[in-house]
Amino acid sequence: MRELDETAAGGPIGARLAAWRLRRGLTREDLASGTGLPFDYVAALETGDEWVDRRGRLAALAAALRLDVADLTGQPYPPRGEEHAVVRAVAFQLRRRVARLHPNSAAGLTLEELAKQTRAAAQADAVGDEHALALALPELIEAADQAVVTAPALGRTEAVRLRVQVHVLGAGLLRRLGYKDLAWMLLHDARRGTREPLPVLVEEVRLLIDLGLPEYALARAERAEDAGAGWELPVLAALAQAMAGRRRHAEQLLAEAAGRATDARESAMVVAARAAVAAEYGDAEEAAMHARASELTVLDGAQRSRLLMVAAAAEARQDSADQAAARLVEADTAAPLRLRLDPFARELVAALAARTTDTVQVAAVRKLAERAGLR
Image (cartoon, rainbow, N blue to C red; front, side, top):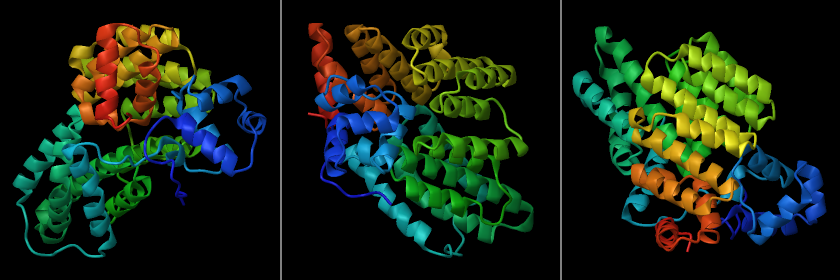
């Protein structure tokens, strides 16, 4: 269970790391030894001269301090602005829904209308519009639950499919907000009356990665393979392998994903994944190379924002802070709330605030920090 502490309200990971280390009675040498990370890196994190941009390192630090990773990232973040407040409020509505054992059996939306609204929610998710997704989800989940109960026999299969899709969309939003326990409950709820649906298994892999549990993510990915999968599953498995320090295995999985891609968009997403995996095992130059090679124009807003954030992190690691800031601002334009709620993006914003020198970029990073609640 996540522990409560007064350092959880935003700001860089290093500040929370120092507070928790002292609370645990550890020295910096103890923490470095317990994580396998360089002492200089741990010290620089705590003083604000370094930042966390790798899931594996975040997981190692959390494990050494006997914490959930959210205790170091500070999620869920205090609402900043009306849209963020609306998005966060949805978590409480979904918690009430999950706690209710039986859905309302009264007829709700027709299957055609449910399918239409589910497509709209999926599109909001793809472009990174967390606000529109959050507004749609509570009623959509209720309607999907009702549809499974009230649909005629011929429509039951479609009702179950839509219910799974809606629950996965909800779990994804909750995961990104930091309500990972609630996301897991929603995914468990999505399994009712079905065998293990592939979309649920794939979202569980994402959730386990975000929880800092790569080995569990890989085990779940193997189960998902048995259910049949496309390019996305080996991409997620590659990220988990990179978190665990197994670069060769990650490269093999990325090659497999490239072979499964069926169009320009999927191919571009695999290239973007190559950038993220390279960043995870600490090769900023390779990450930047893959980011430049990816075709941004075929990516949806959320994926474009994510790729630009990886590119920004790679530029920052190569001491190109102004270029990194420009990429980060571009990522914020593509999917604002999605970026500002990402713990690694927030880390980078805080790091660039002290490193950017170009006057225009300095102002842009400061505005981004303010909108994210980091200053």
